[in-house]
Length: 312
Image 1 (cartoon, rainbow, N blue to C red):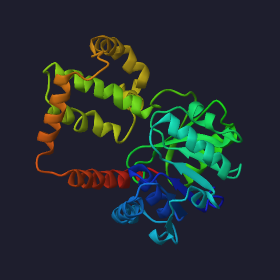
Image 2 (image 1 turned 90 degrees about the horizontal axis):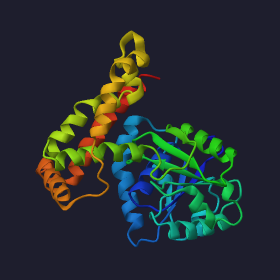
Image 3 (image 1 turned 135 degrees about the vertical axis):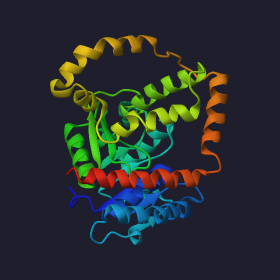
């Protein structure tokens, strides 16, 4: 798969698109990015420069270089000669459909068009494609894509099985950890899992059970540490001792069901919860800027990724 994709097009060079571009470059691909924003090229090149030291620590492919990045505001020029298209445009279905109509006209039929959409369904997006909707797929990363391995691959109603297989193979070839969602759901899987946890966090804060900083501590110094190593199902399988998941469920399915029944069920953010979250996050951040917090996050991620690499 790496030999069949030598040049990738990045459509939309915002935070996600720029991160994809940095990763593709680090994996030895030639990258052509396009965006209509006036400052897009400068912002993109600045992002790649900042991300490159981390990518060097993770390991570069032979010949990988930021010099292989090109930028053009012309969509047709960006798509010309691309073997793979990663689209990271705005999360608006009307804009996506119009963009995919144009991409479908420009890209040869064998070129996969993957969307980074965090919640829109490919069945709706690919309605803009008159010729080859079968080559369109969701390839949703987790931020920042150049560090977080997860990619959620989801086909639409008209996506072919071959496209799914090829997209999965491409993402694996560049070191990602793709998962295949067999059904479309709003928000895909990982965002829904985040949303479920955060709903309970917001509920507990609003109820006065815990403040923002302690809620974060409860996650990142408790189950979050374990989740950085194994998913919840395998963690609970381990929690059952020698009896595994069977023993765990025999003893703890009842208590878990009782906790489920007591979880918060709100479907919106109240003014009180909104204020508590903003005030609490600013207090927890203290004098650390957004850039400083991002560096702290990325440094810890690099350490964890290095540890996880030893499992292979």
